[in-house]
Length: 191
Image (cartoon, rainbow, N blue to C red; front, side, top):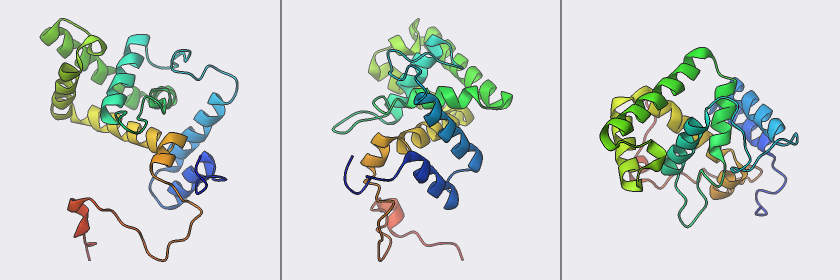
């Protein structure tokens, strides 16, 4: 871990995100419980993890979807951060409505892939998976948004994600470094 990240625990990062209003206390409590569950001696590797909520095929699909949302390129992605484990844990502790959103969304994706390609999502070539995700984003927006939110939160609160952000949570900036996305450069708060 880089020097600017050293000494800042995942728990502290989540506490600060809650304090800043960026995540809810419930999500933060789940993240802390997840960290505790992972450190309690259970299997934690992608090859040894046993899903708590998802079936094995659903878990494999969620892992692949996460890796398409935050791919591995010159830096680690969702797969290396084991985001699918976070999402599985989150769903195991979620209410029935959220669990149904995931189960039904994954079932619709599986049915579409079976209809169009006579194959499950995880077995499709990457180009077909990307096309399926683009269709999912348009036709199943609530599920896709929930999935994307969970992938992003899981990734950017993981050690890998924090390193990717160059998180300097204990650093002082004389002014906000800001965002360099063109769409955000001219943003002005409503007033």
